[in-house]
Image (cartoon, rainbow, N blue to C red; front, side, top):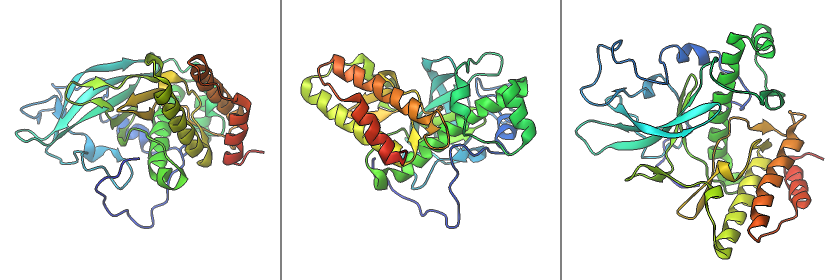
Length: 308
């Protein structure tokens, strides 16, 4: 993890688990349509950019907060284009900055699709072990009603935000893992640290796109094992880990796409999902000449997670 200028952490604040629901989650979502800025509805639009920064109305990432995060209320957001399309969400490149100053940062805005267009076709196994406080909401999710699908999308976004926040906080004590800093969450829009070439606005390549030399390949495997150990010690499995959910930037391995993160103890599918994660990545490394014992790695991680 990188060290940043820090702010004092508030006292007496309990940490939320990744499977805790947020009763204000959907209420916040209704204040803003994340897919596009409604320029006609906002009579107080800034002179530049697409809209005012949404920082003030969002759930914020963990402390200490990186110094590059723009938190000023005078900031505006400017959408620069799309970075990635997916079955459940699309990722956009957004510049948040203060007009007429050099103060700005690039963000990746991950926007989960609306209930009629998203494809959470594999969500049942991941959602086991996650809980909501109201039985009506659980019935809606189980029945996949329109409201239930909206709640499920909210859980995906909230789960990813909280998992990233938790990993950011525990990495120094549990080991070494690099994940994008989770800047904020509003409804089904998650804003993350942009990982890549900030000057060109080019995202870092996925591991699957690379053909690393033996020395780099070994370094990437060691970084991956460190990351998997941190996840296991936090009681988590990525749930959908593959070379497509790992970025490489300046020699660093970055773990991304964690909406389906699972508690390996609370979720009965957890150990199997962890084993699948290990199989996916060990197969990729083996195909490039670095063979690892899949079963041994899986046993080691389950042991670190406290699963016997």
